[in-house]
Amino acid sequence: MLLELFDYIGLMCLRICLGFSQGFVYSSLHLVVANWVPRQERGTWGTVVFSGAHAGNTFNNFFTGLMLHWFPGNWPLVFYVWASIGAFWTLIFAFTTFAYPTDFTNMSEKEKAILTAYMEETQKKEHSANTPWKDIMGSLPVWAIIVAMIGHDWGLFALVADVPKFMKSVLHFNVKQNGYANAGVFACIWTIGILSGILVDFLQRNNYLKRVHSRKNRHYYCISGAFFRPTWCRIYWLQYYRGYNFACNW
Picture 1 (cartoon, rainbow, N blue to C red):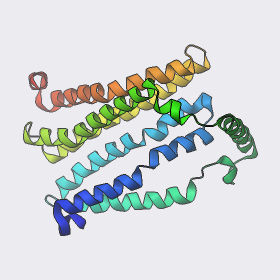
Picture 2 (picture 1 turned 180 degrees about the horizontal axis):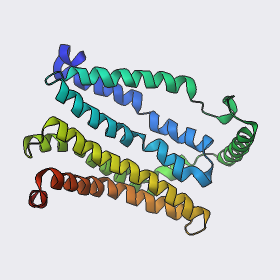
Picture 3 (picture 1 turned 90 degrees about the vertical axis):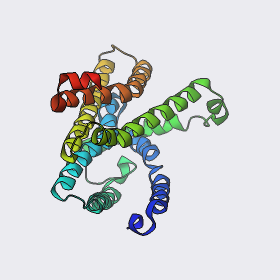
Picture 4 (picture 1 turned 135 degrees about the vertical axis):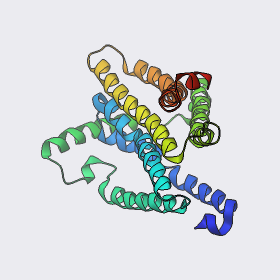
């Protein structure tokens, strides 16, 4: 509606508002995962939580391609559908999600005892000392992570925004093929992410890899993989739709 009334100015204002509102989501999820998921299972369930964005992109691209194919030219429908689903999910999340296991009543006593004991241990360690903000902000490894994440996000969002346009304008994919191809890419990222979380937990439980090494190695793999995995997945889809020679030339 804002786009129809205010054109690109409305879009810019809408994106700014979304950024302010959604900017707290990932930091909040870190707290929820830390309180709810024990360390020996955090690789698996933490990945399930944070890979939800890729799951959303999978279904979004798939069904958006179908909707635009079934209702050509009716692009506002896509925004209304996904906005409605997002609002419905927000209501469910608001009334079914709790920051601490002690606030949730619908669980067995055994589960509650395990999670409560783990939460008390975590909070005791977290409050054992004040947060060294000065040392953190002056740490070169911290700034290296910040720079790496900025590059990761820029590259990922460039792929999300520009590659579908390239596939339509240059490679002449129709809207349904474009939706299928991009959905397949994010489905692969989603699946690989969850499998990597399961693998990390397995390696740590069996003392094949220390937690600090697994976090560093996986962080590097995820940042670099954000570029390589979509590239190889798209080459596969190009080969499927346009042939081997076309994919190699691209």
